[in-house]
Amino acid sequence: MTAVRNGTYWQLRLMPGEEIVETLAGFVRRHRIKSGFLTAIGAAEDITLGCFNPKTRTYHKRTFAGDHEVAALVGNVAWDGKDPLCHIHAVISTPRLVTFAGHLFSGKVTVTLEVALVPGTRRLNRRPDPLSGLKLLHLSA
Image 1: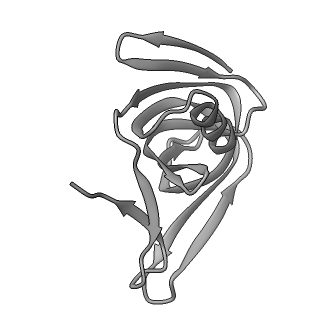
Image 2 (image 1 turned 120 degrees about the horizontal axis):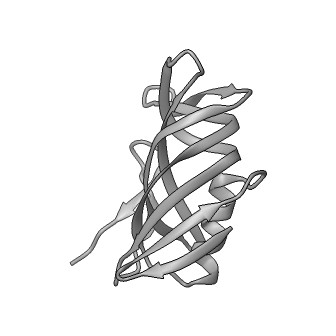
């Protein structure tokens, strides 16, 4: 990955073979980013997306093998204790321009992933939500 500070945000370029979620979380940890939001475009393979079912409190997951366009990726950055947590959703497209979307669990960059990461000034944390079982953003005044 290469990265450059560009005014108030970071411009990142992930390289072929890099795992998207792990690479972004590692960057957040190394640069001590307290919180933020991100967006990206590019291409990836072996992408696992999920859709949460609140009744069963589980994700239905599907993995997409082969090269896919990452048409849109959007997410936020917070912390779960000592670990950064990048909550990311993605829209991907097949070569036939069929799109799929969901929570991004993993994916490996094939050509590039160009990411804009805007850091926040306050540390945001995630806490378990008893209703959903998910770790949701904890926002306090």
